[in-house]
Length: 636
Image: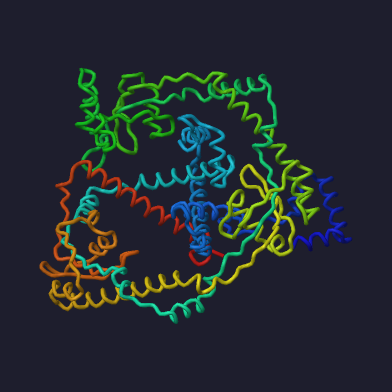
């Protein structure tokens, strides 16, 4: 493609097009270029808003990194199904766009001050408890964000959280729902399972040389070395440019004065430690009753009663009641607006009047105002100097990036010109594959670039590719094409694979036979004895009992008994271990009355979370239909 562009650039048609573009820019200005520009490829359009392939690619890379991080060190990237990753990521971006658009239509907004406080208060961006800009930029770069794109993402997520919260406020579980859930979730059962472990059956599996050779031949595509490249590259760094920029003390003092003006404009941002007593409002207590009750409590407190004791006795906030109502030190934009307004208008030790919020009625006491001194010039001088250097370096970086890209295109067969013009060394990295590399090419965006046809097959330079605060131009120095892995090298891996597969098949067959005998009414002891196994028995357990393997617990609590004294049974796969026959012989309904208040509160919170998830899912389904984005046409 690049060669065709290079050849075409010398034609008369290309020269005429250059003249037309020059005329348009002269008459209408640079903005008119958009009239002729071809936009980025669009993955999907959501109510007129385009989600481009570039945006999709960036988000896919972030999710790929997250998946590999969760898989642990040494995880094989080839295990990630790219088709499924693309489909799920595109669905996620569509859902985010729909929810964000809905939040904006409802007039929800993300406060700039709150976003700034969220960033400054995020422990990920702090060093020794203080915000550190270098760490901030490094963390963002590792996740594929620039500071501005991260702020946009944070603002969008804040809108979505506000929308989800407003949906959840309307779906609080009723007392009846809590009682019914308690009956199910605290239910106890007598459970037994007979485990057929894959490794036990695998020990009896014999794999012949013919089996191994046949597997190798049939799956030859699995036994190929990865394509490997030796790559040369030139790397431009914003940090390196910033290191060479000098700023004066006067300039730093001007920046310090600007920060002081911003702090004064933001008002009192000191954190406050409050305590509260919450009375919920519902079928059993009206808002007026709660206000009256807290009014009486307020009079008792003014007469000398202990706020902590009253909070422990009366408060229906499970998170703070046991701490005497103490909510800890918090900043603005954390609590309900009415609650926050009341807290910020109190003096230390002062009591509020009863305050009504969506959570109920509160009586609030201010315990402490954090005493902080604004930073001195000396404390901020180094940070401000670095900010100024980086700000000025950005202009130089952008200009050198443009120059870098132009030279790489004009001198497509070498990196020497780029290196000399920018004063940068030509570096080299070995063993670059499509899925892994070291140095800058640990970034998948750069790896993808050197595997593009023009770079890989034609030997041309890549374009200048920016990732975070660096940019790279690369070319392939040496290419090692995939080669077949000989049978002798793959033999042990193939034998282990066949033994595992056949052992699992044997375990599944044995479990199926045991289930059939269990269902026919045979004595369970006889069944276990014939297989040389013992039943694992647990009496009166809940679904979350740690003694139950998760798969066994799920299966046991999905079974239903036709009548008392009967036995229900099923088969279940135990991931990574084999299969099991699971039986249930007794069911004891849950008892709401036996639950503690904290357990009831936790259940109410969990039910509320489930309700929010359900309601948000229902909203998304409706929004997708309205936008013409059903499951069949979200993915291209």
